[in-house]
Amino acid sequence: MTDLIASDVDDYAHIATRMALEPELRDAMRRRILENVHKLFKQDVAVQAWSTRLQLSLSLTPNPNPNPNPNPNPNRFRRGARCCSGSPRH
Image (cartoon, rainbow, N blue to C red; front, top):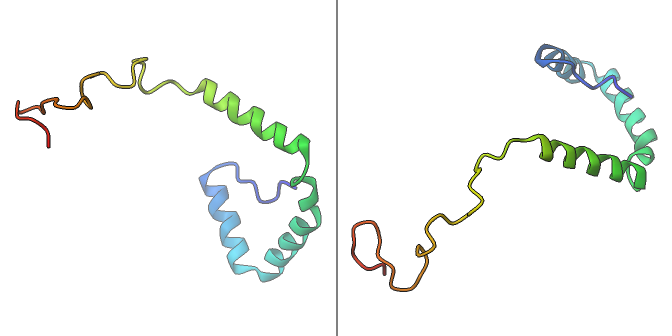
């Protein structure tokens, strides 16, 4: 069932407009989704496919913070540490 998958922004707008303005089409799509929902949910294969896809996506995403140290200032949260103005933190 790929009728509701858009290939680009214009296609998305076209599909959304048709679904909004054509109740018969909307009802037909709703019926088809409900008739086929069992193919997606409660299926280990579907869960594994989504898991694999998400893991692949995350592995291909560049790390926005290449610094391996998540806290570059180790004294930042130490009791008695001073803030940037030099005065003690409260």
